[in-house]
Length: 147
Image (cartoon, rainbow, N blue to C red; front, side, top):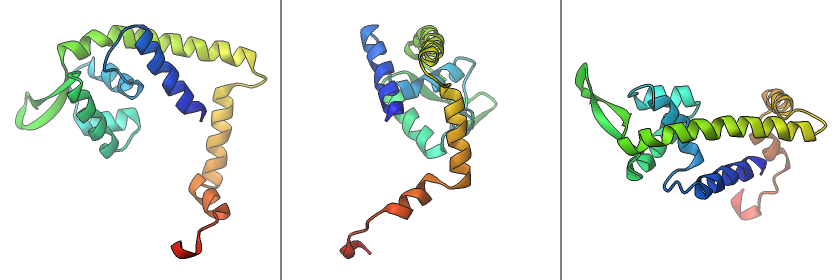
């Protein structure tokens, strides 16, 4: 729930700044692409998402005219994702928003009795012991007609 609220808050920041067509899930991808064109496989690895998820993100970013797919310079049969002029223009704002988000998290942690990053680490350790899917399966009440 908190992650969804954070995502919505960043979307609100973009709206307040008058940035159209930008979604929080695009940020990291656009910042990586600022260093040069990349394959979807490279982007998915660097962003820590599945190839399928990155493909969907790239398709949405292409519709928003933030990226384009171009032939690889060394092999015209291969394709890479590159920033459009509009996509490149968003990168300075994204970097500023990223820094502001990090600073806001630090300030938020000052108000809490614990660190959010420490809590995240503890959560990951607990989920390594037993997955969230396994935990849900332990308590789900499956309707009879679905068994």
